[in-house]
Image (cartoon, rainbow, N blue to C red; front, side, top):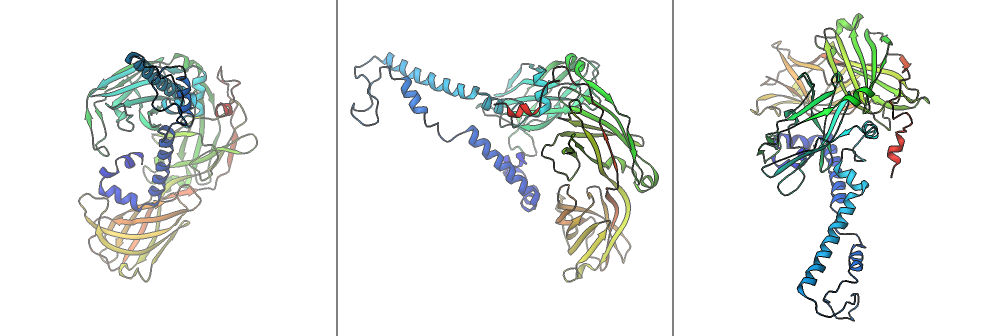
Length: 535
């Protein structure tokens, strides 16, 4: 959305139309624009502070300068009228310039501003894991500064351990203006000493000046050195950027992993559970690093669920759970409609191995080494074979809307027409169904078809529109709704069929206390809340 706002004029008609008609995108756009306005007001105030002029003039009280007004003119400072040489006037002007620059540098050097703008440790932009790494002295400076075509790329902050890597990148254009979100970070590799690529970097946004570039290590890091090599040949992205600059901003540096690896703590887990429908969950281990906590577990299918899940369905499942503190209060949830005040999950990474799906959940904060923490399973979603359907006459929908109901979901189909496919550049003719309703299930991995009852032919149907977040019931609004591919004429009678349902299961009952982990040396007495209370 940030890129779209910056390059809205060049985004293309299809994307513009979607954003204009999508309520979720409109809400996100308003949120991002409000954030940008806050940045603008913070970084570029319309005027200097009220006492700036007073401070400058007071510092010049003893400097001989020719007066610009009569001695008795109100509001002026009385200075000696004796003429001075041009050298003295130039010296006075230089003093004023030095004072202004010094004042600006002083303001910029204050932690409340400099850290906010120039660092990956900015207060509104960092997390507890990164601050723990900073406390342990694990911030590395590769001293990277490369320049070409007037553009300069700098990297002066990198945090890395066995869980993740985070580096702050500053890019400026020929005028010194910051450039963000214009680099394809897949051009940068992170390799171990054996030459194996261990991470794929991506942008996490950042501030108006610093772009945070990051990656996770689901398998950990097994060597004491990592090599980061960038082959940056282009600034600007063809999809959004109307200006693309070709050049050479290549760089290469090494990262010392020895200290971070020595601080990594592993806690084995032996709990497992099978749901009533046959999903097996096996907890494996917790890996505590200076910057994060990685929870590793696996899921597999058994019983009737194994017969219902189609091929590749397991890798599209989501596990839903939360953590509670020793007082029973939620402090973090995963894939849930619960809304804790602090969200600690960074990412979840599945890896399919045969009929077992391994999960790597990385958290920036999970204090099982400091206090009692309880894991609570809330449910899961997984695609299952289904045959829910609704039959209707397309030409009668305006007066007789069709009602689809199945497995707690409800949709109303209010119209159907033949029109251009909004997802196709060739503007192929397709069937367009207008729908709205409420869904209890997850919807993302549903599979739908529409059958022409006269010919018996089935056409693939895909949903285009918006639906709410992780709540118990999600509002579904079509934009335009279902797109029926290959359909060029309205059938007399049709049936909309859901062949696969991304079903949400909540019939679970499992929780346990995480074993208390060994604290990392140097963080035994650190209270994470102190980070946010510091001035």
